[in-house]
Image (cartoon, rainbow, N blue to C red; front, side, top):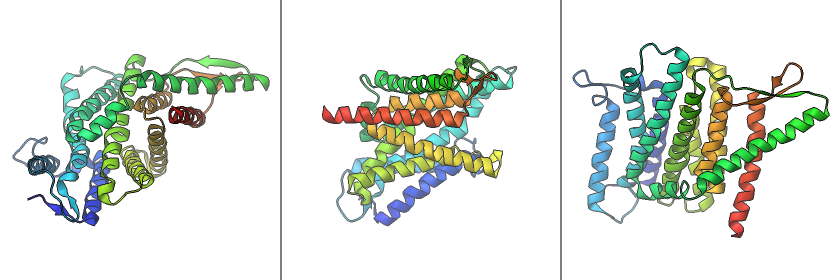
Length: 337
């Protein structure tokens, strides 16, 4: 017989799982492990993943089971999406990189290569995790398929170019000289560009793809029957998780708080872009450009004799505004069709 739980308990399990997933990014070294097994299979995290897999198999064998509350099996896909990603990324990324990376890599090059490997790994995890929920996988495929890539990448390029075309004449009108500053990335520029693009696409298909889609699917079962309520709750939970996982505690309290607010706001804005445009490539392209800008991997405009560029925060804010205008126009056109 299928195990059914009250909705309040389902909410508690979901929130606890997302909070735990956010903390594991920072404190995965503290996960209890067995002294008799390897760290990958001897950790409490692996035990949780194995238990959830067994529950999912059993629930699939039983099938639908009416009754009060919510089936525990309905929660297992998103719980697996959360914990499998943490188990793989915390248990396998660093040992794999130590195995395949040359020992004499400079720090900057090693960091660039490791980030590229993380991006490829996250894309592989998304492909694996999509097996846990067919509706969520279909939701993601629909937002990546067809001409979505050309439309999304082109829209972001248009937003970036539009801001540059506004800023350059305005600066020139006020007597400022204008120049194009070359990229100044640490490490190989091509590896930085590729790695950050892979990370951006992986994070968008994971957070604003699989997780967002699965939360939207679970909404009615959790008591959220209004479409607007489902969208805002799903958007809020995925953005909070995104913010927690980008919290840099090593940089100190003030910097950590700023990073949390930035990541939380960025996650919310990118989620709104996906809901507006039904296009994950749009959000991934915008995300990649922000990563490139923060790492100095893209050209920037320099103003005045000192060739001073705008602060990265100002550039990001302006491009986000332009991207939202573009997304809104695309949504209006799509609604008319």
